[in-house]
Image (cartoon, rainbow, N blue to C red; front, top):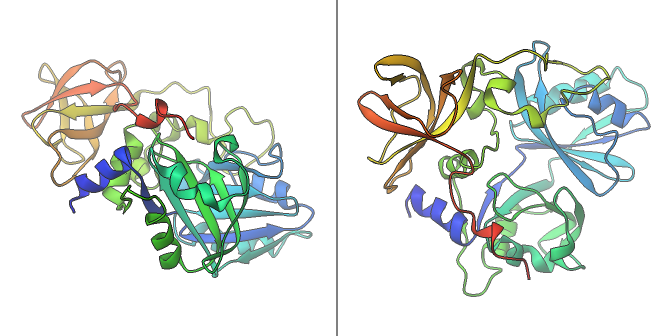
Length: 329
Protein backbone atom coordinates (compact mmCIF):
# COMPACT_ATOMS: atom_id res chain seq x y z
CA UNK A 1 0.00 0.00 0.00
CA UNK A 2 1.38 3.41 -0.97
CA UNK A 3 1.14 6.55 1.13
CA UNK A 4 -1.40 7.87 -1.38
CA UNK A 5 -3.49 4.73 -0.82
CA UNK A 6 -3.47 5.53 2.91
CA UNK A 7 -4.63 9.06 2.16
CA UNK A 8 -7.37 7.81 -0.17
CA UNK A 9 -8.61 5.37 2.46
CA UNK A 10 -9.02 8.21 4.94
CA UNK A 11 -10.91 10.31 2.41
CA UNK A 12 -13.21 7.48 1.26
CA UNK A 13 -13.50 5.06 4.23
CA UNK A 14 -11.60 5.59 7.50
CA UNK A 15 -8.11 5.49 8.96
CA UNK A 16 -6.58 5.04 12.40
CA UNK A 17 -3.50 6.73 13.82
CA UNK A 18 -1.92 7.23 17.27
CA UNK A 19 -2.79 10.41 19.13
CA UNK A 20 -0.94 11.47 22.24
CA UNK A 21 2.74 10.61 22.41
CA UNK A 22 2.44 11.11 26.18
CA UNK A 23 -0.58 11.37 28.47
CA UNK A 24 -0.94 12.89 31.95
CA UNK A 25 -3.68 13.25 34.54
CA UNK A 26 -3.86 16.56 36.42
CA UNK A 27 -5.77 16.66 39.71
CA UNK A 28 -6.21 19.04 42.61
CA UNK A 29 -8.35 22.04 43.48
CA UNK A 30 -6.22 24.47 41.44
CA UNK A 31 -5.75 22.21 38.40
CA UNK A 32 -7.65 24.40 35.91
CA UNK A 33 -5.86 27.61 36.90
CA UNK A 34 -2.51 25.82 36.85
CA UNK A 35 -2.90 24.22 33.41
CA UNK A 36 -4.52 27.31 31.86
CA UNK A 37 -1.45 29.36 32.78
CA UNK A 38 0.68 27.03 30.67
CA UNK A 39 -1.59 26.70 27.64
CA UNK A 40 -2.45 29.18 24.90
CA UNK A 41 -6.19 28.60 25.55
CA UNK A 42 -7.85 28.42 28.94
CA UNK A 43 -9.83 25.39 30.12
CA UNK A 44 -11.62 27.30 32.87
CA UNK A 45 -14.77 27.72 30.76
CA UNK A 46 -14.93 24.07 29.68
CA UNK A 47 -17.42 21.92 31.53
CA UNK A 48 -17.02 18.21 32.31
CA UNK A 49 -17.35 16.02 29.24
CA UNK A 50 -15.73 18.53 26.88
CA UNK A 51 -12.29 18.77 25.32
CA UNK A 52 -10.00 21.54 24.17
CA UNK A 53 -7.23 21.56 21.57
CA UNK A 54 -4.51 24.16 21.96
CA UNK A 55 -0.84 25.01 21.60
CA UNK A 56 1.81 25.19 24.29
CA UNK A 57 4.08 28.23 23.90
CA UNK A 58 7.51 29.08 25.25
CA UNK A 59 8.17 32.42 26.90
CA UNK A 60 8.85 33.97 23.49
CA UNK A 61 5.47 32.93 22.11
CA UNK A 62 6.72 30.11 19.86
CA UNK A 63 4.87 26.76 19.86
CA UNK A 64 6.62 23.90 21.63
CA UNK A 65 3.74 21.40 21.67
CA UNK A 66 0.13 20.79 20.66
CA UNK A 67 -2.20 19.16 23.18
CA UNK A 68 -5.71 17.91 23.75
CA UNK A 69 -7.24 18.44 27.20
CA UNK A 70 -10.21 16.32 28.27
CA UNK A 71 -12.08 17.97 31.15
CA UNK A 72 -13.51 15.55 33.72
CA UNK A 73 -15.50 16.28 36.87
CA UNK A 74 -12.46 15.80 39.14
CA UNK A 75 -9.43 15.86 36.85
CA UNK A 76 -7.94 16.82 33.49
CA UNK A 77 -6.49 14.38 30.97
CA UNK A 78 -3.75 16.00 28.87
CA UNK A 79 -2.59 14.35 25.64
CA UNK A 80 0.66 15.67 24.18
CA UNK A 81 1.51 15.12 20.52
CA UNK A 82 5.23 15.74 21.08
CA UNK A 83 6.15 12.73 23.22
CA UNK A 84 6.78 13.78 26.83
CA UNK A 85 8.76 17.02 26.68
CA UNK A 86 5.93 19.27 27.81
CA UNK A 87 4.38 16.76 30.19
CA UNK A 88 7.73 16.13 31.87
CA UNK A 89 8.05 19.85 32.53
CA UNK A 90 4.41 19.94 33.62
CA UNK A 91 5.08 17.39 36.33
CA UNK A 92 8.15 19.32 37.47
CA UNK A 93 6.29 22.64 37.67
CA UNK A 94 3.45 21.05 39.61
CA UNK A 95 5.89 20.12 42.39
CA UNK A 96 6.14 23.78 43.41
CA UNK A 97 2.38 24.38 43.33
CA UNK A 98 0.05 23.43 46.16
CA UNK A 99 -3.26 21.72 45.41
CA UNK A 100 -2.07 20.34 42.05
CA UNK A 101 -0.76 16.86 41.21
CA UNK A 102 0.43 15.55 37.84
CA UNK A 103 0.62 11.82 37.08
CA UNK A 104 2.20 10.57 33.85
CA UNK A 105 0.14 7.63 32.60
CA UNK A 106 1.96 4.72 31.01
CA UNK A 107 -1.04 2.37 30.83
CA UNK A 108 -3.35 4.66 28.84
CA UNK A 109 -3.47 4.57 25.06
CA UNK A 110 -5.10 6.94 22.57
CA UNK A 111 -6.02 6.40 18.92
CA UNK A 112 -7.72 8.71 16.44
CA UNK A 113 -10.26 7.40 13.92
CA UNK A 114 -11.12 9.65 10.97
CA UNK A 115 -12.94 9.37 7.66
CA UNK A 116 -16.49 9.29 6.25
CA UNK A 117 -17.03 5.85 7.84
CA UNK A 118 -15.23 6.63 11.12
CA UNK A 119 -18.50 6.94 13.02
CA UNK A 120 -19.36 3.37 12.06
CA UNK A 121 -16.05 2.11 13.48
CA UNK A 122 -16.70 3.65 16.91
CA UNK A 123 -20.50 3.52 17.13
CA UNK A 124 -20.55 0.46 19.41
CA UNK A 125 -18.15 1.98 21.95
CA UNK A 126 -20.68 4.33 23.55
CA UNK A 127 -24.09 3.65 25.09
CA UNK A 128 -25.93 6.48 23.33
CA UNK A 129 -26.48 7.35 19.68
CA UNK A 130 -23.22 8.27 18.00
CA UNK A 131 -24.99 11.01 16.01
CA UNK A 132 -25.73 12.95 19.21
CA UNK A 133 -22.06 13.28 20.18
CA UNK A 134 -21.17 16.89 19.36
CA UNK A 135 -17.79 18.18 18.26
CA UNK A 136 -15.67 18.86 21.34
CA UNK A 137 -17.58 16.45 23.59
CA UNK A 138 -16.74 13.01 24.96
CA UNK A 139 -18.59 10.16 26.66
CA UNK A 140 -17.56 6.99 28.52
CA UNK A 141 -16.49 4.11 26.27
CA UNK A 142 -15.67 0.44 26.78
CA UNK A 143 -14.67 -2.61 24.73
CA UNK A 144 -14.75 -5.83 26.74
CA UNK A 145 -11.29 -7.30 26.96
CA UNK A 146 -9.75 -4.45 24.94
CA UNK A 147 -10.48 -1.04 26.49
CA UNK A 148 -11.20 -0.19 30.13
CA UNK A 149 -12.07 3.18 31.70
CA UNK A 150 -12.33 4.57 28.18
CA UNK A 151 -13.57 7.77 26.60
CA UNK A 152 -14.87 8.44 23.11
CA UNK A 153 -14.43 12.05 21.97
CA UNK A 154 -15.61 13.83 18.84
CA UNK A 155 -12.56 15.63 17.45
CA UNK A 156 -10.21 15.45 14.49
CA UNK A 157 -7.69 17.09 12.21
CA UNK A 158 -8.69 16.17 8.63
CA UNK A 159 -12.15 17.69 8.16
CA UNK A 160 -13.76 14.24 8.01
CA UNK A 161 -15.76 12.63 10.82
CA UNK A 162 -13.21 12.28 13.58
CA UNK A 163 -13.05 10.57 16.96
CA UNK A 164 -10.54 9.99 19.72
CA UNK A 165 -10.60 6.69 21.61
CA UNK A 166 -8.59 6.66 24.82
CA UNK A 167 -8.40 4.46 27.89
CA UNK A 168 -6.49 1.62 29.51
CA UNK A 169 -5.57 -1.10 27.07
CA UNK A 170 -3.10 -2.39 24.53
CA UNK A 171 -2.73 -0.06 21.56
CA UNK A 172 -2.25 -2.87 19.04
CA UNK A 173 -5.38 -4.70 20.20
CA UNK A 174 -7.42 -1.51 20.14
CA UNK A 175 -6.17 -0.65 16.65
CA UNK A 176 -7.00 -4.14 15.38
CA UNK A 177 -10.49 -3.95 16.87
CA UNK A 178 -11.22 -0.57 15.28
CA UNK A 179 -9.87 -1.51 11.85
CA UNK A 180 -12.12 -4.57 11.70
CA UNK A 181 -15.19 -2.94 13.22
CA UNK A 182 -17.04 -2.07 10.00
CA UNK A 183 -18.26 -4.97 7.90
CA UNK A 184 -17.52 -4.44 4.23
CA UNK A 185 -15.37 -1.35 4.80
CA UNK A 186 -11.59 -1.62 4.97
CA UNK A 187 -9.88 0.80 7.33
CA UNK A 188 -6.14 1.40 7.35
CA UNK A 189 -3.47 2.64 9.70
CA UNK A 190 -2.37 5.95 8.24
CA UNK A 191 1.19 7.26 8.42
CA UNK A 192 2.36 10.75 9.24
CA UNK A 193 2.97 11.88 5.65
CA UNK A 194 -0.56 11.04 4.48
CA UNK A 195 -2.05 12.51 7.65
CA UNK A 196 -0.19 15.79 7.16
CA UNK A 197 -1.57 16.25 3.67
CA UNK A 198 -5.12 15.48 4.79
CA UNK A 199 -4.82 17.93 7.71
CA UNK A 200 -3.12 20.74 5.81
CA UNK A 201 -5.73 20.46 3.05
CA UNK A 202 -8.28 21.72 5.59
CA UNK A 203 -5.92 24.23 7.28
CA UNK A 204 -5.63 22.27 10.52
CA UNK A 205 -2.32 23.11 12.25
CA UNK A 206 -0.01 20.17 12.92
CA UNK A 207 2.93 20.39 15.32
CA UNK A 208 5.83 20.48 14.69
CA UNK A 209 5.74 20.50 10.87
CA UNK A 210 3.65 23.64 10.40
CA UNK A 211 5.86 25.63 12.75
CA UNK A 212 9.21 24.65 11.23
CA UNK A 213 11.81 27.42 10.92
CA UNK A 214 10.21 29.33 13.82
CA UNK A 215 7.07 30.18 11.87
CA UNK A 216 4.85 32.42 13.99
CA UNK A 217 1.29 31.62 15.00
CA UNK A 218 -0.27 34.49 13.04
CA UNK A 219 1.71 33.69 9.88
CA UNK A 220 0.71 30.04 10.22
CA UNK A 221 -2.99 30.91 10.52
CA UNK A 222 -3.16 29.07 13.85
CA UNK A 223 -4.71 31.85 15.93
CA UNK A 224 -7.76 29.70 16.72
CA UNK A 225 -5.52 27.40 18.76
CA UNK A 226 -4.63 30.31 21.03
CA UNK A 227 -6.53 32.66 23.31
CA UNK A 228 -5.59 35.91 21.64
CA UNK A 229 -8.40 37.71 23.47
CA UNK A 230 -7.59 36.26 26.90
CA UNK A 231 -7.37 38.82 29.68
CA UNK A 232 -5.57 36.52 32.13
CA UNK A 233 -1.85 35.81 32.17
CA UNK A 234 -0.43 32.79 30.39
CA UNK A 235 2.97 31.70 29.21
CA UNK A 236 4.05 32.99 25.81
CA UNK A 237 1.25 35.52 25.33
CA UNK A 238 1.52 36.99 21.83
CA UNK A 239 0.53 40.37 20.44
CA UNK A 240 -2.68 39.83 18.50
CA UNK A 241 -2.69 43.38 17.15
CA UNK A 242 0.55 43.00 15.17
CA UNK A 243 0.07 43.01 11.40
CA UNK A 244 1.56 40.08 9.53
CA UNK A 245 4.04 40.60 6.70
CA UNK A 246 3.60 37.08 5.31
CA UNK A 247 1.27 34.11 5.60
CA UNK A 248 0.97 30.42 4.77
CA UNK A 249 -1.20 29.52 1.79
CA UNK A 250 -1.89 26.17 0.12
CA UNK A 251 -0.41 25.57 -3.33
CA UNK A 252 -1.13 22.91 -5.91
CA UNK A 253 0.87 21.64 -8.88
CA UNK A 254 -0.60 19.59 -11.70
CA UNK A 255 2.72 17.91 -12.61
CA UNK A 256 2.82 15.62 -9.59
CA UNK A 257 5.02 17.42 -7.10
CA UNK A 258 5.71 20.66 -5.27
CA UNK A 259 9.41 21.53 -4.85
CA UNK A 260 11.04 20.91 -1.47
CA UNK A 261 10.76 23.25 1.51
CA UNK A 262 12.96 26.32 1.21
CA UNK A 263 12.61 26.60 -2.59
CA UNK A 264 12.11 30.18 -3.75
CA UNK A 265 8.62 31.06 -5.03
CA UNK A 266 8.31 33.74 -7.70
CA UNK A 267 5.60 35.76 -9.42
CA UNK A 268 6.56 37.09 -12.86
CA UNK A 269 10.21 36.54 -11.93
CA UNK A 270 9.98 38.38 -8.60
CA UNK A 271 10.57 36.48 -5.35
CA UNK A 272 7.42 36.51 -3.21
CA UNK A 273 8.17 33.75 -0.71
CA UNK A 274 9.36 30.16 -0.23
CA UNK A 275 7.91 26.66 -0.11
CA UNK A 276 7.22 25.91 3.55
CA UNK A 277 6.13 22.25 3.31
CA UNK A 278 5.62 19.87 0.41
CA UNK A 279 3.59 16.66 0.31
CA UNK A 280 5.45 13.53 -0.77
CA UNK A 281 2.76 10.90 -1.32
CA UNK A 282 3.88 7.96 -3.42
CA UNK A 283 1.37 7.49 -6.25
CA UNK A 284 -0.26 10.93 -6.08
CA UNK A 285 -1.00 12.46 -9.49
CA UNK A 286 -0.97 16.05 -8.30
CA UNK A 287 1.32 17.99 -5.99
CA UNK A 288 0.20 19.76 -2.84
CA UNK A 289 2.07 21.91 -0.38
CA UNK A 290 2.22 25.06 1.70
CA UNK A 291 4.04 28.24 0.75
CA UNK A 292 5.01 31.12 3.01
CA UNK A 293 4.26 34.16 0.87
CA UNK A 294 4.61 37.86 1.45
CA UNK A 295 1.56 40.09 1.79
CA UNK A 296 -0.37 40.58 -0.53
CA UNK A 297 0.60 37.34 -2.30
CA UNK A 298 -0.69 34.98 0.42
CA UNK A 299 -4.17 34.61 -1.06
CA UNK A 300 -5.80 31.90 -3.21
CA UNK A 301 -6.15 32.10 -6.98
CA UNK A 302 -2.64 33.21 -8.01
CA UNK A 303 -0.33 31.58 -10.56
CA UNK A 304 3.25 31.29 -9.27
CA UNK A 305 6.41 29.33 -9.96
CA UNK A 306 9.03 27.48 -7.92
CA UNK A 307 12.13 25.89 -9.45
CA UNK A 308 10.45 25.80 -12.84
CA UNK A 309 7.27 24.15 -11.49
CA UNK A 310 3.99 25.97 -12.10
CA UNK A 311 1.98 26.45 -8.89
CA UNK A 312 -1.43 27.86 -8.10
CA UNK A 313 -2.50 29.08 -4.69
CA UNK A 314 -5.77 27.47 -3.59
CA UNK A 315 -8.37 28.07 -0.91
CA UNK A 316 -8.98 25.57 1.86
CA UNK A 317 -10.52 23.11 2.28
CA UNK A 318 -8.61 22.15 -0.85
CA UNK A 319 -10.56 18.91 -1.30
CA UNK A 320 -14.22 17.86 -1.42
CA UNK A 321 -15.04 16.26 1.95
CA UNK A 322 -17.46 13.34 1.89
CA UNK A 323 -18.18 13.74 5.59
CA UNK A 324 -19.73 17.14 4.86
CA UNK A 325 -22.40 15.58 2.63
CA UNK A 326 -22.91 12.10 4.14
CA UNK A 327 -24.88 12.17 7.42
CA UNK A 328 -24.20 9.95 10.43
CA UNK A 329 -26.67 7.14 10.85
